[in-house]
Length: 170
Image (cartoon, rainbow, N blue to C red; front, side):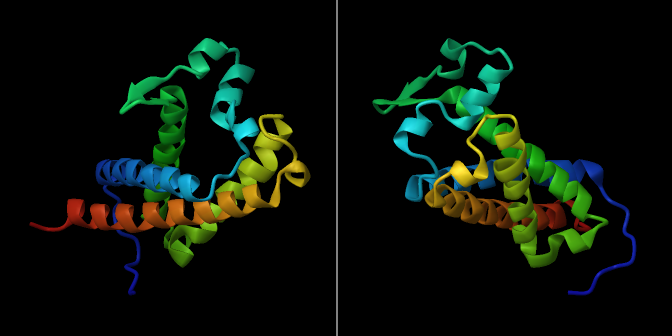
């Protein structure tokens, strides 16, 4: 892959590409967690997004609010947080990588692992949103680490292609 020296970034296209990539990668991460659930059912009774909101004073009746689809009660507030996180980081990644191509090294997998370490090993345990890294089960580390790789790889592939298409000369 030949890298151009400095190309002018189309910020609008990068944000659009990141937003779309974040939605798609958020779906990938949800699917991943259905195959390899990161937490026990007991720890998922109040999942990390719900707990974080509660730590900021949002009442449980809001954080545990659901909608029903096909007979399943689904946590819309958790989904809002999940997709908010996913799209925010996808946009940041897409904007940053337009002029910092080295961040795309390994198609985002190292970037994804860095996000996992920062949040699941560092920030959330320090905030007491999740247990300390040493108190998290091995299954949680495996699921979250691999899930973050799949998530950011999806952001990289989808965002890169959408940006290319949005900025292609017509």
